[in-house]
Image 1 (cartoon, rainbow, N blue to C red):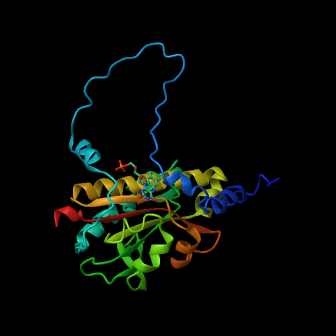
Image 2: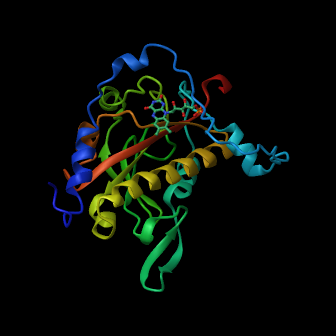
Image 3: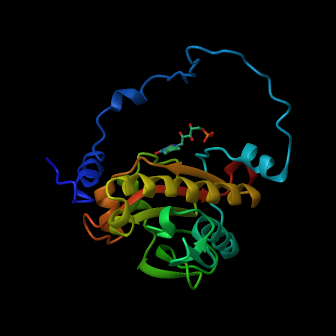
Length: 249
Ligand SMILES: Cc1cc2nc3c(=O)[nH]c(=O)nc-3n(C[C@H](O)[C@H](O)[C@H](O)COP(=O)(O)O)c2cc1C
């Protein structure tokens, strides 16, 4: 029995055990999307037209793209995507107490468990490498200086789809930050927060005419090691590749 007062063991057990890929067969055939028709429908009401807007255009334009161009990305685009993902907006307070930096995404308890990293190649004015996004300074901290795509190749199930992307943004959680307050449930909150970050990046990318691929299929342990994350305390949860559409070049 995992002690209830231990906030992380249960989720850590799940986290570490969700790495191995056990169902290769599932990739072989076409999968049919299921839609639920609930039991006990009392009536069905047609909705009025959903309406168009600039945001709706971006939502419609976003798609998973798997054939990036070998072009150079302006630094401004990288800046825009990172800021949209997790940028700091303004100091704020949660429940009148906790002081935090409000970001472009919501965060349970204003605790912001995520750290954003990005692998880069062919970004104008940036050396190819691995960077950590400093949300306070809105700057990139160079951690590894090299083109790391061949290192990423065996770690990503989405290879070669993202081989020519300019960025692979990786969201990593510092689990303690959210689990000290929320216990095992805090693990869910970290995953949910990644979804917010990824969607912001995708929509901002659509706005800039870029393409994206959200990727959950990677080998955590090797990616964590490459990013020098502290074992068990931190972990990569989700990644987004971004770049240009090949056909447009
Ligand atoms: C949590 C999550 C993980 C995903 N992981 C991968 C991945 O590892 N590789 C990949 O090629 N696509 C991945 N995708 C993209 C989906 O395949 C894609 O979103 C889906 O087919 C719907 O297509 P669309 O994004 O073009 O609308 C992922 C999407 C989500 C939401």
